[in-house]
Structures are given as C-alpha cells and as structure tokens.
Image (cartoon, rainbow over all chains, first blue to last red; front, side, top):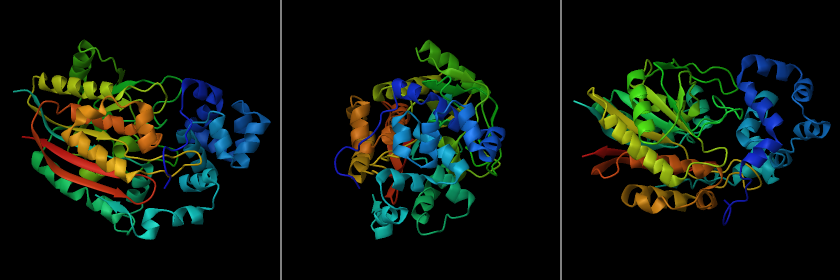
Length: 117
Length: 278
C-alpha cells in the first residue's frame, strides 16, 4: 500500500498523441489477424507501426514506465502483454521496481488480512 | 404503463474476474469471497425479474480505440457480441439488447442535452461481461443496454455530469411507453492504480467512505474533481464516477439497500452495492 496520493501519469490528449502509434498497435491486438502478425514478428509489426528503434528496445527490455511516459496507454500495454507473455502483475512488479514474489508478498490477501466491509 | 427503474447496482469490474470465472476458480480462497458476494444480488434480481439491465461502464480499447473516442456511447442494437480483449473469444453467448428502449433513450437523452454516440455494433468487454455471468445465467434472461463512458482519455466527464446522466436516464426510462422493468448498473472502481511505481495502490478507507456517501450523501461527491478521485482512489480508480450515474438514476426517490460488500485482496478494492426503490 502506498501512503498519500499515488504517483501517476494522467492520460491526456498530449500524452495520447505522444504515444499514439504505440497505443494504436497494441490496442489493435484485439483483432486475431493483427495479433497473429504481431506474435509472428513483433519487431516487424512495431517498425511498420512507426516505432523507433529506441521504442522497440524499450518493449524488449520491458521498460514499462518509460513506455508509459512516452504515451502508451496502460490498457494497450496490457494487450501487448497478452501477446508477448507478461501478465499485469508481471508488468506491475516491474514498474514498482521489485520482483513479482516481493509484490505478491505485499498484498493483503497474501498476508491474510484482505479488507472486508 | 411505463418504463420503471426497479433496482440499481454498483459493481467493480476487472479482467481478472473474467479469467477467474472462465478458469473455474470461483471456489479458490482468493476468489470465493468475491464470487459469493454476488449470489444474494443474483437471487434478488431473479425476484425482481427485470426486462432490461442498463449498464453504465467503460470500455478498455476493446471497442473504442484512440482514432475516435466518445465521451458517452449508447448501445442501440438488438444484440451485442462479447469482445475479444486480446486473448481470444470467451465461451459466452452474445447478449440480447432492447433496441426499442435504446432508441427511446437516445431521443430522450439528446432532447435532454446529452449527446451520446449511437452504436449499432458494440462488442462488450469485461466492463459488462465480467459481471453479467455473476448475475444471470446464459442464455441470458435480461436484455442489456450498454452505455459506455470515457474514463480513460482526459478530459473526462465530471462527476456531476455522470450524476446528471443518471437523472436523464431515469427520465428516459420513465417516459418509455411500454411497461418495462429496468435495473440500472454501473461498473468500475473502486480504488486501484495499474501503472507506474505506485502500481497496486488501493485505499480501502476511501472506498468504504465512498460507499457510505454514495448511499446517504451522494451530492457531496459531485464537486470532487478527477484529481480528488485519483488522489484518493488511484488513477484508474477514477472509474468510480460512473457509480454516480447509477445513483443519479435514483435521485429523489426513496430506496432501501439490499446488499453491500467490499473486498480488497490484491489490486483493486472490489465494491458491490444493490439498491431497490421503495
């Protein structure tokens, strides 16, 4: 749990325009044909969508915070994860800078104290 | 004879609910308290026998992409497919709609100065479809009218705008000439944040306060800004403003609370509330 207001990137028009090409490709992965093409050749699909070499490298390095700062929408990143094989929790732990095990250990259910009300 | 709102529901949504349901994990320790909480609401709904479930929810780039992003979008079809969200189709049948009431609501809303996109093709994502199987059994007995709202791409509609949308929906239902029983449901929230170094932020204290105020003092929630909501409930938790549309649909009407549940085990404060006009 975090104390105080969480740090966040508001997904504004400016932010969405910055990463439009990346969000567009990842959001398109709801289409089975686009998904198959992306899975078969992720780099080719990303290049065709206008990703720079640096952006492609960030995807491979799973530098999710950097991708979000560059305007990828979080729900689009989730679709990239479904295609590339990382889960929301995998991505979340990475964004927090900790292991998945450490993250899960910090969760209320893991501690047996999930909040009811 | 007229349309009538016979119940109102607020519920969280999450893709993991769909995964857990589809994988048959409802009796696992990490999910059982969540799924069990829907049983009383499902039984209550069966007794209410609504014709229509009018769902105010948000899509997650499954139907609406950045090329054209509507602030409000109303389903106006007789059937809605279940969206492929990126992992293939779910084993759920398409959902019946109620086009006559949808088009009546479209006319009523626009006359009331709400101008939704009118959708004759609207694949429903987990904003609707992670919850529907918990409230109804396929083949679905309730018809669904989906109303998607933008809580993803700023600028978002204000909390007060969502409340007014609910009031306008209630006027639209009440002016529908055919005897039709409607339950209004909003999905989203409660607190959660899915991005950045504070991924996993959950604020149960605020969620419980929100549920209290939603029921007893909803107008106190209308002046809160999106930043107020995101400070308290996380960036993605701003979805909770959609609950004000549900509550606004009961504006000025006495009601009783039928059910309330809260469970914050992991990434999201899961809230559930059911209200019945008296």
